[in-house]
Image (cartoon, rainbow, N blue to C red; front, top):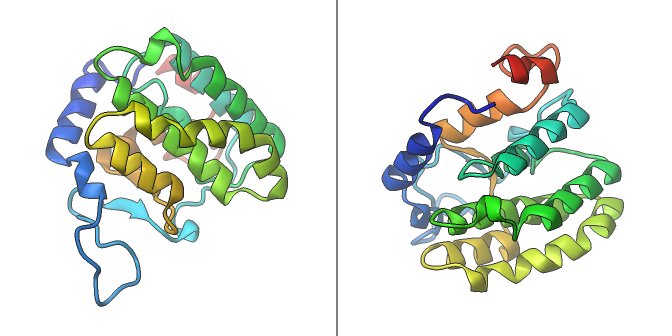
Length: 207
């Protein structure tokens, strides 16, 4: 089930205000070794994994939700997987995500006018899962990551340059990015006992 009627408008509005190219640092920050991003536009982008880790995620339930969203298609269909891209997960969970990536990345659900946005976020997610994973996760994600590395050349400006940096830069771009990303994550990730997130798959269906 969608967050609310008009979520597409929210996403497009966010991209219009917080431009994707603002994820590309324009100058080194002398007071920090991190990329100098516009934190007003993207307040929830982090480079320290400890700032984004969530405890107690029900990955089975969350991936059920992700598959429903992917099957429905649309701008936000890939965002459930994007929202868990920085979390510690088992090789089995990573393998399921790899399977979903290959099943849907070229499917009709993410084609059309929002193609670049969707491919950007899906490939970004694959990159983070691979790069943050242990050796076993890297093993099951290596084909998906290799495929994701080919995706920048299929995208227009500014998505191509942004994705290339996010897949290969020494800094890993983590977090919910902005308020819309955070709201989506909290409405699609299942964490029993955490009142900020879904409590169960049934909770998602009910909402």
